[in-house]
Image (cartoon, rainbow, N blue to C red):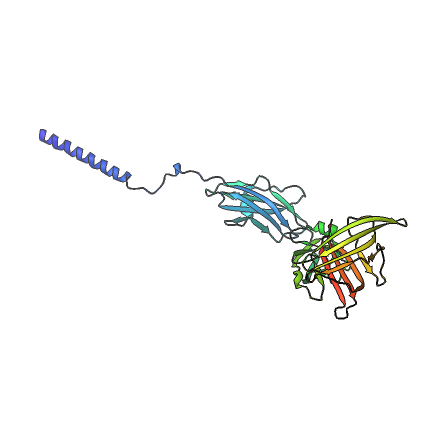
Amino acid sequence: MKKQTRKLFLGMMIGAAALTMVSCSSDDGGNTTPDKKHETPAEKATIELAIGEVSDTAIQFTVETTNAKSITYYAIASTEKGKAPIVTEQDILTKGTTLNAWEKTIEIKELTPETEYYIFAIAKNSDGISTIVKQPITATTQKKIDVSIELSAISSTHEQILFTITPTGAKKIKYKIVKSSEKLTFDEVLATGGNIMNVKAPSSLKPKGFEADTEYTIYVAAESMTDAKLLKTATVKTKKADEAVNDGTIIFSTLEFTSELEEKAGQKLAYYNMTFKNADWQAQFEIGALSTDANTIKDGKYTLSSKRDAGKPGPERIADNFVVKDLKTGKTVLDIDYGDITITKENGLYKIVIDMVKLDIKNERFKGSFQGTPLKK
């Protein structure tokens, strides 16, 4: 009996040990199925919308989001202006557009002109948890665009920009040219731009007074009979000064002037003593003008008479005390007989053209030009 009891006891011990080994083997076998109860939940998604550009049939909006695996947006027209339609989360998900990849800017097309739209959106994180925008964004599409503008034949010289405006369906057109670093809106062009008189035919324009080797933007604002608005732009770069046609014109790089006021016969006269310079030439002329402003050179056409005007120049005249010097040779040009200086100002810049007749038959003209801002000394 003792031997049997001992054998039974040993058998039970061996069986328990085997069970323990099997159990340990099962625990350490690397069960790859995680316990989902202990997983960390995905961070909640965030989403914000902002209206971008709006046309007559399209609305652009930007999306800022974090932790989103998908977004769904839904645009709906308002039945009562200023009042958002009642939209549920289910409406957005079932009627909206879902994107799993998207750009920052999204465009909704084929909309109705002059209509107020509300845009709702939902972002979902990787767990499928939804975040809805707190407030929908809203925009009203513009009037139907029934006006067009074509900008063509765009070219330039070192100081002139040439282009043609061809309108269709416009009642008002204005244009403005500024350096490309400056940006204009439709309203700014309409308020301060130059007027196009004939809105039913192409207009070829050749404005002057621009800086050489500079990029400009041509802005054209057009308004239709239905008050639809259109802004058209084009860029152009003026040529370098040394690319200008060589007709003997001396391009002066700087202009300095002094001035004084005087009263004669009850009239205010301004005298401007102008000194033009570049690396090779220097030219000095004094002109007279009817003006009360000595700080700003008055535009106009000034004449040097072959009969010569002694003393101070009269209105629109050039004094006889001019000096033109070739700095390369050190010689002074003495054979200038008569001529004109034409001063214009456009887009805030001066354009001054000197055209003098010389007595030298072989070289009968003295021509010079300056464009820019004169410096008062």
